Length: 371
Ligand code: NAD
Ligand code: TYD
Image (cartoon, rainbow, N blue to C red; front, top):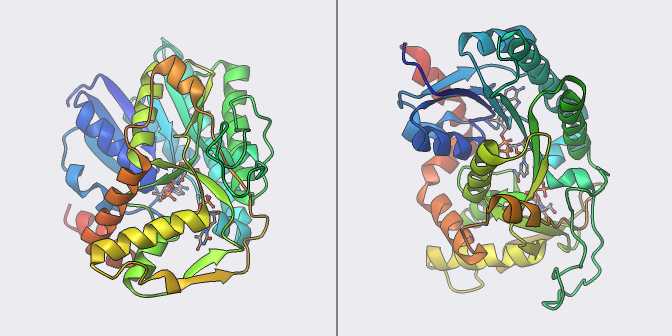
């Protein structure tokens, strides 16, 4: 059996952000064993990791983070010394319809991982030395900011308001999704404060890029434009989100996992606020251009629909601490990131068609059928 320098479980590695983190770690650290622990819910898709699935330092394990005995067994089996925890229910609209699933996975699942890690690590002669439990969270736990500059203004700090979420901002979640993530963040910090577990929490803004499930704004709209389907804009489209290219989030996770200080919180974001309606227009323009449609051809697909319940008005992350203390900065300008993203979805229509038809769920069965 190969001995690796580190044995790291990445939970939720078959999802959107998780797949980018797994890819980065598997390729960059051949001396680390990366164990992707994922239940393969509707959001998990092993086709996201086709390019690295045969790498010798990669193992996929289909498992539920809520299954305490199994997680304990896996900790022991793989002699795990690091956990990067991304598995979650992640879509706000689903949380409004089915909050229980969010409490189960996001709260109980996180607690299950914490407790299993605690028992295993405390049983080792070296204890918590060299161990790390890194929990990935969201800016949505901070609540919502005011839109003090509704028309947008390049002057001053932020285009839509001068205030930002900082690491010290008091938690004030509004949706069942953000309430469940806030609760899980509290459990992680409690395990540090109570048992001395070496934990880190990061709170990131909205991600965009390849392999995102097309229930989220950007991939949903790209796919709808391609099929000339309506683009459902919630409310007046005036809500503001702060967008970060997913590969830059994965890079930040790498830096923080290795160099972040135990018990600290780091905000991750690119100071890139957009009103929904404006980002939608950029997406339309880019898709039309790349498909060879006349400019503005798909604008007629914009359809204003009833607003999301409890729709947070504005998110804006201040990631100064991460830049100053650990030197991380986004590598891509937004224009470049959105171009890359639209191109990727248009070039990978088979991926999108497999997801929207449900065929992607057969990938795992086919892959493992003959083993
Ligand atoms: P996603 O929905 O694309 O993927 C979630 C993954 O978790 C899937 O592969 C799914 O199969 C897996 N999973 C769900 N329940 C599980 C369970 N019980 N056991 C094991 N695996 C399970 O999510 P994402 O957008 O990649 O987000 C990943 C993490 O990052 C989440 O914790 C989310 O809260 C956080 N986050 C997301 C964003 C964003 O914009 N997407 C921004 C900030 C933070
Ligand atoms: P989403 O991608 O669901 O991320 P989040 O809710 O975590 O921010 O939504 C981004 C923004 O786009 C949010 O303000 C809701 C809005 N939205 C729409 O207007 N229409 C849609 O069909 C979707 C999915 C989102």
